[in-house]
Length: 561
Image (cartoon, rainbow, N blue to C red; front, side, top):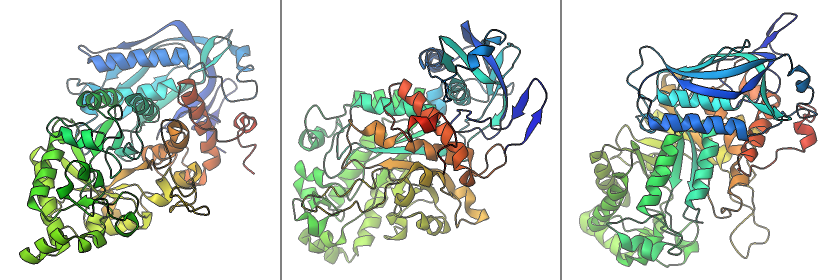
């Protein structure tokens, strides 16, 4: 089904059957010949003063290739490949090279957090058949890292021999179709340890997801310790052991940066803040009120946004966290304000009457204060879609990034207002959907966003649906999300992986696969590669869930129906 050039000795294909790279590069030519990895294989760097995190990345790649021990996903797990080992050439060296006009190399972690408009993840990769050195070349160390993640996925093991059967391989130029490719984890409804987050970051690195959206607080708990405001975590965390210290935050940020991942922290305001009432009850409207009346889920309570004291307090809290982070982005949330709560809150109504403002006028002022503090730190603010489409917040700066979550249909309305967007639609990308109702005393209930979002559904997402050609530049990318009412460390890996990898290819490769075929029409081509990266994740200690019986995984297309 794929275009190919043939000779008696060698067949080139644009996407070889079962090639296990995820996301698939945007340009790719590959043969079907075997080369063996030398027992003395090494990765060399051809420029001076490489940053330490690049050296560390090289060490991790060499280790991963040795320890993955992944048998190829075919019947026999590569036994027939072994017949060619005796005559196969041996691959000794991979060279990392910065392009001749590249600037002085900066650390990967530095390149990973530069502004979205200037971030460069492009790379090229060649693996010759004759055993001569392969090359990864790029403009930045971040691009070199992306090339390494591709290179790692080429290798299989059979009977102790590490080899690839896709030589020669050439990726002339690979780069993301969209600069933002994210995964969001809610660590407030249920707590996740730093080690859980690091394991997730390892999986994100493998599939080139470059943004960890950390929804770190919510109405249920406040796990983040802030030196200037110790009372928030002291009163708001589930326990002393279920908190993130400043050192924990920096540990995650550093670990992510070394893997080319930007950490976007979200402290949702003014809604989703009931837990602030545990330490500052006067700052929260409807605190401990009946949640069915005043909240989407328990507990009820949201910041008393009309009060300038509360607005300044919130700005100080956000600034205290944001100034410790290298990312250019910081999310203030802004979703699901419960207007009934504010209507019933006497101090809110008194203030509005005295000042002659509407609630949304007050929200404008609150946003000007909180966002102004973040802008003063050089941060770009990120909000949920209601701030634009429902509340019509007028004090949002034009460079604000808007996350579209309620429905994919809302994206067009946001870009029509001139805002940049990140796709996060519940009807495609919510990983928690379909698990049944979690509210007690509702035996027949289902989750509000049923049904379960399969990898196939998210893989068919069209980022430019209903977006005019003149607005396409406003689409930054997208992310899959895990809200954790029913998730914890025990099921984190299985509910996220490999499904979250589906959007990684949507936003890296784009609509057109390297063979010229449309992505949406080629799910059966994608499945063997997704099997492959899922099995590789498992070899790396990530408990990714199976997609099919192994019989099917070893026989591509046999179970397509």
